[in-house]
Image (tube, rainbow, N blue to C red; front, side):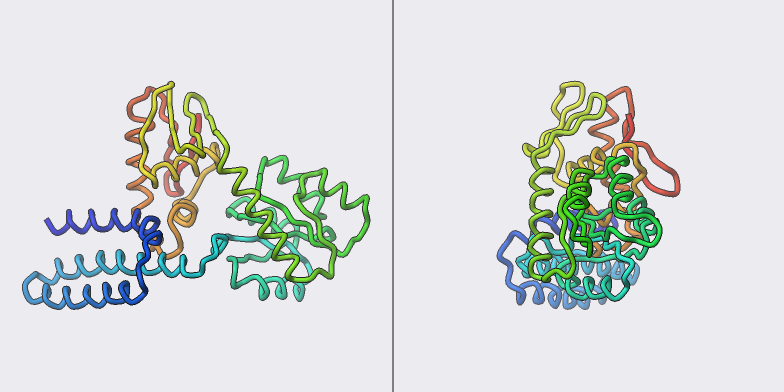
Length: 304
């Protein structure tokens, strides 16, 4: 019985992480909730076997801590917070200076060569790329051309010391989204980053995606397959949207966890597998062709 209750509380916490922050919950109330949990556990420990007590406490703690973590994210009042940026810059002093200036607003990763940057882009997902034109191995134009070949739509901001109109035009025509010349004022750089992220988010939120007989409308949050409407819960829709945006690409459990939930979740949790199973029951099971494939030992992919 307690195992069942624990599972329900755990699953609820996954959705509560998105829903609860929208409520005007004071910080003191959240802290009080955690304190009450401790008192409750102390009382239960005198009546329940130690294994049940441990299970209840762990699950309840996951729920309260995740709720508090999500609420604190909203307190920042910055919708762009916790987005992940990749900086491809061979000047290590410049790269570290950029990271220091932007670390309070974004999650940042550095690459000091073009090849290193391309590798990181093949295994990780980023919300924006800042890259130099002059790099020791391959230049910024070659990187942008390769990303265009991969059909990677991540916004690309070129930050370079080359102030030549022909280079600017070439980079922008080849797939760059913005071009800034060093030295740049940090306020302007931050404004350009915010603009690119807003623009990209608005473009994504108004699109319709299709693969085979499966279609999803991001704006209306509707899903259909073989022209039959499918009702999904919020997390299920987010998961399917992530799959269809990356169709044909293997997504690890860690990638899914970071994108759909956040870093407060333990990487050993089975929340990804549970929600993939929920999604399969609605999107795959009623139909002859199965779209969501398991890549054993790695993760999942959506493939027609």
